[in-house]
Image (spheres, rainbow, N blue to C red):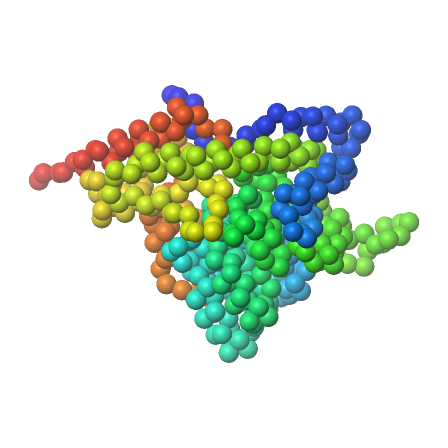
Length: 386
């Protein structure tokens, strides 16, 4: 069997080891250190504006701290995009709060502004004004942030911008992660750049950033002994992981270019087939195309081929693909949560497939994917005779 073609595997640039070796040479084998400071500065310079950054050990930690900064407490309600990975919603429950899930819209597949406002009005009428809104840039495609932030400001609700999948994406020239009140990033092994595991919290609010930094380092008070007046967390990024991140930042733009090229290759190679849909990039949007996604409509596709038939055919060729995120309101763990919207997210989940998208994919890898998909589409389904 040929080597595995992964969905999105880590892709080192070569200079990561230099920063890691510096950490070893200086004996900075601990949380914090020069690489953490350097990585935070690299992110600030890349993101632009007046933002400040705290490097953490995961994007989930960044969301958790964001909710704490916004004073989310047991019994509070937090609005969250339904179509996302569970890490966007889980920290709400960590704090004893309740997630309120919102459907997607069809232009970007992200949080629907109309249903957002409907939910806010209904929750306020019910005596439960939401404490925060979590919006996600799925697969690197920016959400409709202008509409979403305008609604949030109208009702005085802060926005947490989950840009875990969207480092390098932008809207009207402004980088994702800096479009809400608090932004979060992820550097998990499958992201566009990685620190092995890691994340970051972003904000222009200096007080929030300093408090996040304090809470993430076990909330140790200024004293010669260990003094604690707040509950803290062990959420800071290690100096070793930050060294990897510094090397990865040096190749970020090339990684974005390669993933966008992957998307263009798939779209062009499959353009002759009906029933396949690739999400276009709206005007003034720039997406990193973290993952190339495709909808397969069996009512229109050649030979009535479905998403799962293509997925299973790819698996036989040792190619990893994956359905789009299963919406949170369909997850057993959130079965009792409120949901506002229609069936857009459900339909996307039913029809959508993530294709191999890593920046380290070769032309041969991409060709294997295309040949498998085309071969499947061209295979007529057998008809049983009784």
